[in-house]
Length: 319
Image (cartoon, rainbow, N blue to C red; front, side):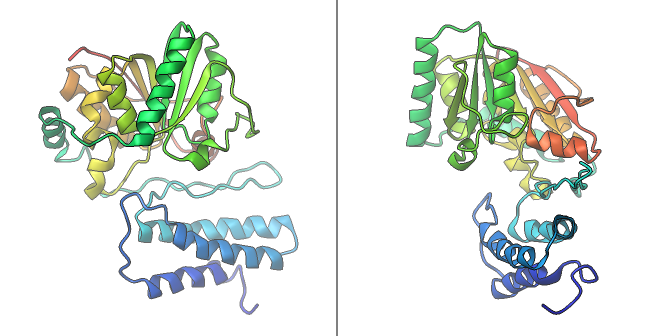
């Protein structure tokens, strides 16, 4: 293989990326595309390079270089720039994960208008069949078992946070929800070890917007609702993809007594708080966290790279 991998840090994998970009200059991408096609190129390149390199330290250095062009792929495919992989070296030090970049200087200028429209317009999207099936599983679990409280963990990914919450609240039913069956099949605990589910834990493959509406419509209320490190959609034009700009936002105050969000993007929580206040009249400010025990893999990565992390806790007000 010609060239200096470290003198030209993008290396062969960068050529794969550029090749994709040239061959597909205007390829349309569906909303929320995962960039799997582009990652296929970089995965092949990584395999080639990993075979060439003979020791772990070289591969770690290469991975650090690769994180630079992953940002370019994310920009090309419309995905968030905060999902870059962090690889620990032998000393246990984590490489930096990227901070969120956004052209907004403050709360989105159209947020209040968007929230008001959603507040006064009925959300009429039909329920998807797999979400209805997941909701029936939830109703059956609640019917068969008696719990002191109900906790909802939305967008739980590999359910690390769901397992931790279930351990912290053994008398509660903790429900983890994620739209990806692949992520839910990789259930892991705080040590990143595969785990079986405790009796007080239920995982559902469902879209949150459908499950949230079903819970409200059927009077299922949770004591606590966690939304940890949601996709920030940092581009200003994507404000309606953030939860507080989504059509489902008016349902959120009706789901739980307390809703807890965490993010490494302070502006996201400030916008959510503004939308919540517009819907309920209740104001709350995000607080900076001092992380000792990470709840999610994202939280571990961001905290390990020294990023400031924030939590917003808001309460229910009957509407």
